[in-house]
Amino acid sequence: MSVFVQQELEIKMELGLENKKVLITGASKGLGLAIAKAFLSEKAVVTICSRMPNIVGKDKQLLSVSGPCLYKCAVDAKNKDSVAQCVKTAAKQMKGLDILINNVGGAEKFASFFDLTNRDWISTYQLNVMSMVYFSRDAYPFLKKSDCPRIVNISSLTGLQPGTFNPHYSTCKAATINLSKYLANIFSRDNILVNCVVPGTFESDSWDRNIQRLAQEKGISIDIAEKEEVELACQSIPLKRIGKADEIVPIILLLASPASSWETGSCIIIDGGKMRSVC
Image 1 (cartoon, helix red, strand yellow):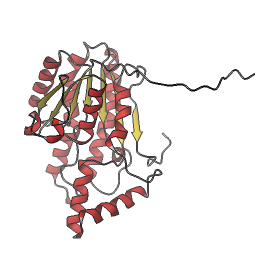
Image 2 (image 1 turned 60 degrees about the horizontal axis):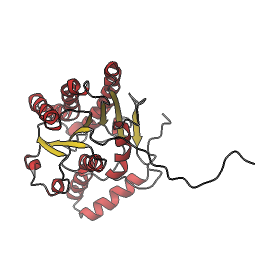
Image 3 (image 1 turned 45 degrees about the vertical axis):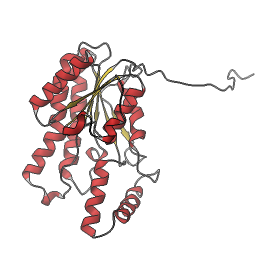
């Protein structure tokens, strides 16, 4: 008789995120908002921050994220003083800090190499890289006091596999991957685990903005522009579709949880199979 007995099993991983104190940057919409909702569903205590002045309650998406475990904080992620105040406020209102999700970032201007100004490069670096420096540095003293400290940085597949557009953005995302590994090395002495999640093309604010740009440039409708871009994107994705924010969130929760206790310095790709390299 086989030693293996076939039986139906209900497997449920206990993430242990209840009452964990989480700060999520760039969380007023898109992936950041999806991350916030997921942590709240796990009964974590969450502070979401954004530069949007209406973050305090006027944004319809934010109104859908409610409850006694949610706090909000307006911040200019490019300004070190603003970030320092945000982190201090978040830690005070949550009575501590266990998890930092560095999600804020993006390309403020969509352009090719020769159409980008020096200012475009500097501004993009400030938003994507320096924001991560500021938040990680200011969160460090609070994370050291946690019994389960985590940092999860959100990068982009373009940081590993750049295309022919938005080089300022892809270069900065490469820097965030490198910085994640560096922080994992030096923060390990305090048992602060640092990992990086690298999404491929997914439905997001940046995707929508790019579609609108293409529609305007080509003089076509947004629906046609999106159809063309989806078809083009899917040519290089084995699963033949772009992703959704909710499909990226689970790995972020896992990396932030006590269940992930021997994972640091990793760069985890979620891209529907697009990345051609095996490592």
